[in-house]
Image (cartoon, rainbow, N blue to C red):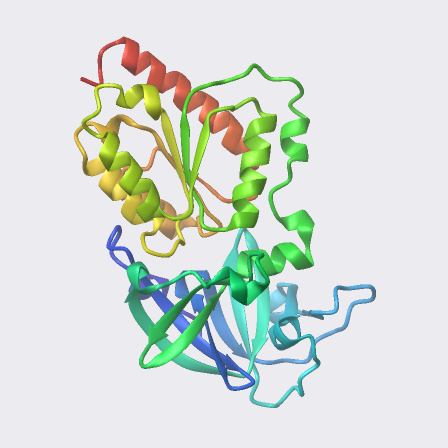
Length: 314
C-alpha cells in the first residue's frame, strides 16, 4: 500500500509527528511516517557478495533497484526466520531509497515530540544507541529507531563526508556565532568537525529544538543579540521540539526573525521543502550535503552582515 503523502503530512510547525509502529520478535519499534515511501509484502531478494551482514541483498520492483536491510538481524545480531507474512518498509531519506524487512505493521500514531524521550545512555553502554527516542503509542512503549544512523553504520559513504570540506582547501577563519540544533551525537560531531575544518570557530550545539529555543528566547531582548547569534542550523526530527517548530518560533519573533535559519535534514523532499518555506526557513538542505552547507552559510552570513550594516534589523 503506497502512502498518500498529501494526506499524512502534518500541519507545519505543530511539533507533532506520525509514527508507524512495526514489530520484530514481538518488540514494538517506530519510524517517522515522513520517511516511509510505501509498504510491500516481502519479495525474493538477490544476495550480494561481500555485503554488510545486515544487508539481505537487492530486489527490483517497478524497474527500481532497492537494497534490503534485514532489520531483525541488525537489531539482534541473529538471523531470524523469514516468514511469508514479512513486510518491506520502503523508505526514502537522504536522497536514498532503502527497504527494511520487518515482521508486522501495527498502525500509525500521532504524538507530540514533547512526549518522545531520549533513552538513558546506560542503555547503550554510555554511547549513543540506535534509538532516536522512546514514545508511548496506544498504550505501548515504542522505540523510534534512528534509520540514518543504521544506514550510516552499514554504508558510511552515504553519510556526511568531511572530505567535501577538505577539498575546499584553506579557508579564512570565521568567528560569526552559529547555533546548531541536532539530537544525534554522531551527526553533531560530524557537522562540528566539518564546520571547524571550514573555518567556523564559534559554534554552539544543542541536543534538540527545545534547548536551542530556550537559549534563543533568553537572548531575544538582549541588545547584543546579533553579536551572540548570526545563524541557526536545525535538524527536523528531534525529541521535545522538532526543527519545524523551532523555525516557526524564531520566525514569529520580531527580533529573532532576522536570524537566517537553515534546515539541515535527511527528510528534505518536495513536500518538506514547501513546509519549510511556509515557516520562513532561509535554506533547506539534505544531510549529506555538507559542502553545500558551508557555501550556504557563507552566503547567508554575508547577507546578514549587509542587512545589519544597513540598519534593516532594527
